[in-house]
Amino acid sequence: MCGGNATGKTMSTSVIEPGTRLAGRYRLEEKVSEADGSTLWKAIDEILARAVAVRTFEPGFPRAAEVVTAARTASRLTDPRLTQVFDADNDGELAYVISEWVSGETLEEMIVSGGPLAPGRAARFVSEAAEALTTAHKAGMSHLCLTARHLVWTTGGTVKLTGLGVEAVLCGVNSTEPARLDALGLGQMLYAALTGHWPGGADESSLPPAPEQNGDHVPPRELREEVPAAVDEIVRRAMEIGAPEEPLTTPAEVAAALAKVPRTPLPLFAGLQSGPPPAVINRPQRAEPPAKTVPQPRPPAARPAAAPQPTAQLSQPPPPSTVSSPSTTAVSQAGQSINRPLVAAAAAVAALVIGIAAWQFTGGKKEANDDPGQGAQPTAPAPAPSATRLQITHAKGIFDLTGNGNPDSKVKPTAHFVKDKKPGTYFETDRYREPYATSFGNFLNGAGFVLDLGSSKQVSKVVLHSPPASAGAAFKVYVGDSDNRSLAPEFGSPTTLGTGTTEVSGTATGRYVIVWFTSSPPSGRVQVGEASVHGTE
Image 1: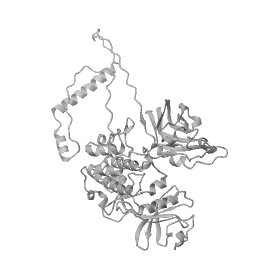
Image 2 (image 1 turned 90 degrees about the horizontal axis):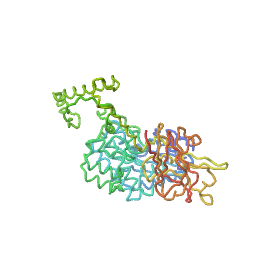
Image 3 (image 1 turned 45 degrees about the horizontal axis):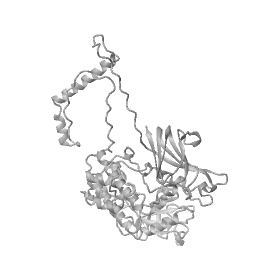
Image 4 (image 1 turned 90 degrees about the vertical axis):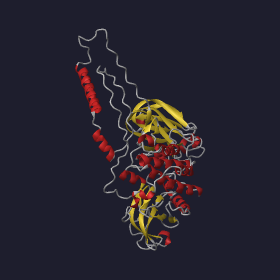
């Protein structure tokens, strides 16, 4: 029996099912989610007659003790915006954590069902999370895994931040700069609330990925004009878009910055809808969601046509309307805007189309009565596309065992961190001790990760960001249409990690980029915080 005092259904280490009781009072009712050896349940506290969330772990789960310790630490926090932990135990047959059952709508679900939030509401929503995290950091706790799924507007009309402490342990995330990582997470949540795009890893959200330009995220104000400049600046500083002079590096700094901008009261949110709470944390979509759409990146400016232009002169069309969004007034004005200048502009465009068609029909040749003194003008070649940062859709860890080797427990679970745009999370190997630190303890012939670009791309540069302790690790890069390095050509020249940024340049085309470490550094552990691939589509 769990904890030595469970009643009800008999529980073994291999069978946990609805109806099982933990600690003699928590009856499991419904499995909510299951991943990587832990399971989240909706349960009933039979003594207090209330719903609770219960997380259980498979026998032998390697981080159960760490999760329980983190949960017990979180239970000492009293901020009502942080999910309350009621109980945590790993002394009996089964480790578990009992916490508050949060019923409501996550930030991600609010965006999916209703589109981006009004800027004032987005600022207020995230400011509540920033203030709650400030309290947590003062107590020595951090989140490290913030996404739009962790911020909830409850059915009771309150804000809840879920996953504090526990989420990071479950995902094996740690950071030497936890405050900066949480400030980044707050900036990402605000970016998503304002734009409807997620500026992080694809596995962290179902929202469309945030667009990038020159290797950096496009600021919210460039995607949505109604975002105030002050709010846009907070996002830039928290996410360090464009290398701001004064970045926001702690939740307290983010909270202080948000306190200075206009904010809309939260009761206007949809979280106050009446009705019974859902069985899981995610609220179903509304039957009639508001007619909003996720904004798309601005299209690039059209390039000048290289073909000869017809000689007909076009009159200048009237300036475009300055109405920023559809409304009843805008519709009525639109009905009156069909006037003579517009008709003239339409006629001019038609003349242009006819001229181009006539030129194409004659093959672009001069007629016999053309001016013989005018020769054909050469066509300027289109400019070559410049290299940009390519999107990585997936990352996976790989390693090769020696004849008597043991599997590396870190490589595969941490591979996705190289693409999450969080500098404090790392792909890493196990730590190998002397005298075989630089040869993976004689257990591995090599280890690394594969980056999937989604389709074949032209690659010109691969950039790795790593901490100083990883300097000296030797590696090779392969690029090809196979994720097997033996079938992919080598890219650039073999090199070693430096103390910060290491670049490998070359020219290759392929869908997969394979980073393969042939030796570990003197410290015994390879760590890579971020990997980026540059080239053209």
